[in-house]
Image (cartoon, rainbow, N blue to C red; front, side, top):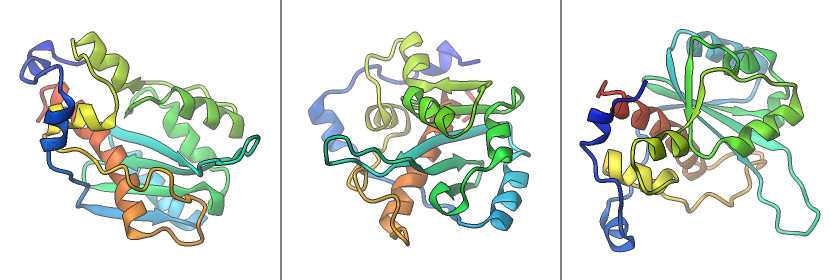
Length: 199
């Protein structure tokens, strides 16, 4: 799936100083926030036309011992849009789970083991064609992992993490939250395309 030739175009390590020098960037395309069933099914119809998706999730952070929150957001990046599915508003979507189990659609994420575990708590889930870029990049010789470092090496930008611990269950998401959430999914798709030699 991935091309070693394509991977060899990039440095495999990055120092703290080099990372700091990489410009911060975010997804600048169309971000679609989904908060109701009608919008969700229209979005899913659009997503099912794709063959390569970026994937990520967000959960409200817990700051107290024993405090646990359910997954609040699923982000899916297509060729020109990122869809933010607000699970706290629309609830369980079987059609969305179907995409995750569709073997004909490649879903790429970073550090997704916990995401899949948490998704399985919401609904039994058998994923197919879902890859973790941390694992795949390791196979290609990259010595780093995580969104910021892989993005810096391969895309030449690093996503901001300032919204990482924000409240993903807020009544309204801020534009900064939307940018953060969309970027993490978009980066996964872009890295995948680069390593496949498509871009």
